[in-house]
Length: 227
Length: 286
Image 1 (tube, one colour):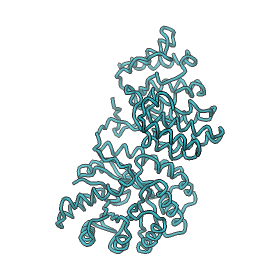
Image 2 (tube, rainbow over the protein chains, first blue to last red; image 1 turned 180 degrees about the vertical axis):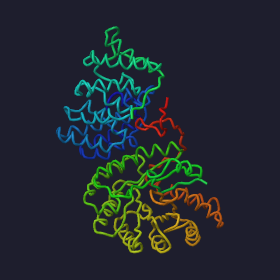
Image 3 (cartoon, chains in turn blue, cyan; image 1 turned 180 degrees about the horizontal axis):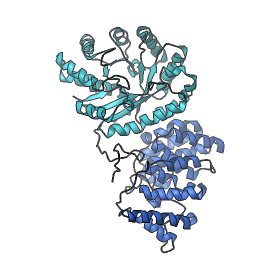
Image 4 (tube, each protein chain N blue to C red; image 1 turned 60 degrees about the horizontal axis):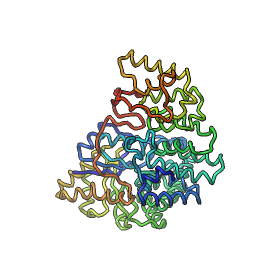
């Protein structure tokens, strides 16, 4: 159990999660039915009250599901693990899919979870997009799709604080794309999100530091729905 | 009049229907997984359907002030198609989800061996997942299908009060009443059962374990048949409390056995999105 999760779960929730973690450790296949039921059993809600959708800080049920999956993973070889995370994602609702995307940051699956990241980035669920662009994507996603993921965050209002890897992956091509996005917004007489300006400054070395630093609060701008 | 429609296939209905249902008093529904009017050709088609039942449709109903629950199963008709058999193996993943309040619709269509195997297996799943069961009785050879249904339910070891036997009529009501199972009646525009006959059955058999639904789907059907049955009950001298019992408290008691009903009023926000998509068209919430 992470320290963060330990802090936000009550005594009863902690006990219940420990019980469920023990159950999947001894019988990993049980995760198929325990993973969907986690929120009912352990608890649900934001871990950070300022981040109700868990865009940056995973929600309580997300973290509990990650803990369960990490426990089950210890019993499997990589092939078995890849098969099961694929099934959890395929049969998962949006909450469960989000937790699988958070979990792959902690699992040894090589690039085998990239199709899940791709699925999340094709959709419009901002919580899934945020979860898909964590450390796993920073490590494994190809540069073209990673840049498009960042741009999709700007389009859909996902805070860039949710995205990992700017230090290693922020490049001139991303700067060009973000500048194009900003130019298009200005031409349309629309606001340019603060995240876009901040990222451009960073990419063109005018200002540090998205990774580990704080990104300004999201401006209240109107974002686009991509159909 | 507050109404819980315990059997309605909202994926095939329009937003006009949702609005009319709300205006008539419908505040909660259960949508059973069933056939779609044409055969599915793979298990994957079922999974997309189940995903919609626990996801998009639940969200869509809430946009109109209606709490949506569902039941999940391999239906009897498609239990005969070997291409769909693997759905049975994936059911536990769905039966564990929030919003799934029973196993169903299970039962018989043509009374085949494959249907019976799927039925028995899913009765077992209901026991394992601590869920009630919604049973569809066949439209052809209904009496024999209902008789065999009750034998299988008894053999399953499930308590009869965990089982709702649906689509009953004058010829099947007595045997189900004697079984201890709940009794479901689907009220259609001009076939099978209408509200006038329903009221007569309620007068003859009382209100205990009696459940009325519209079973509205993609065919000629009427999502307001629950409300119209309530009006017919009033016309026949039943009290407001009687109507409330049949149209709200009975279905709540049955599906409440799942422990997963959500019945608090919906805070309607049509600018909300589900997976990034709203029920509004051409208009993105600001």
